[in-house]
Length: 162
Image (cartoon, rainbow, N blue to C red; front, side):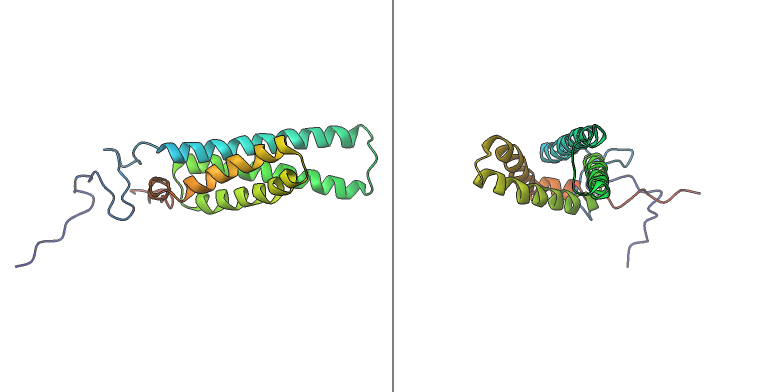
């Protein structure tokens, strides 16, 4: 004799999500945030803040009349700095919330940081190079930890009840 089907709406929430292995609270939200996810989210937000500060400095220099080869090229670069900063803020916030897509976005951001940080180290600019390389390496290592992978498995909001 087979068991009758279980109504998901009437079933009590299990402490473990069988698909992601992520502990859930009684209200269905994800459980406590692992330390690795907090660190990676903090690194992304810190990098976004640094990019926003660089964009502010770049805009000040542009508006104060510093010589540039191409004014519109400088405006485009300023737009890229602002867009990348906004993207990193979103990555940090949504990684903290546990969304799945943020792991790939955070990895790409850290690879960009390594792309700039390693040449800075090799050219003798130790402080900026270390400031870019060390957080990027830590974030990459933590992005592949089991706890962060299990935590960052949320795909979206649950469908509405009615």
